[in-house]
Length: 63
View 1 (cartoon, rainbow, N blue to C red):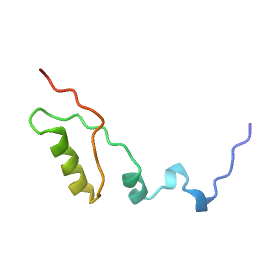
View 2 (view 1 turned 45 degrees about the vertical axis):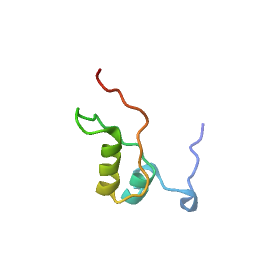
View 3 (view 1 turned 90 degrees about the horizontal axis):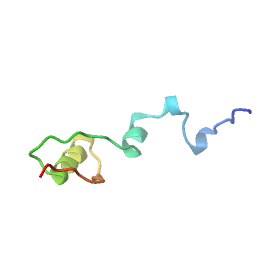
View 4 (view 1 turned 60 degrees about the horizontal axis):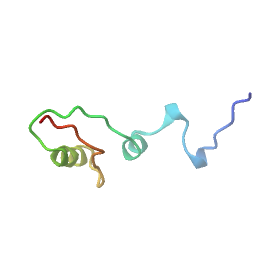
């Protein structure tokens, strides 16, 4: 099997992605502590990384 070449006009090599691209196109796994809501944590992530979109994919709250 031969390794394919990546043309930089279509993206980046995995080890050469700029931090802006990683932040914009990434998933952040967080272990949310008890107390703040999932919505609050998503808001904090948006402010911390200066991005406009962030959300959560579910939550496991203790009963």
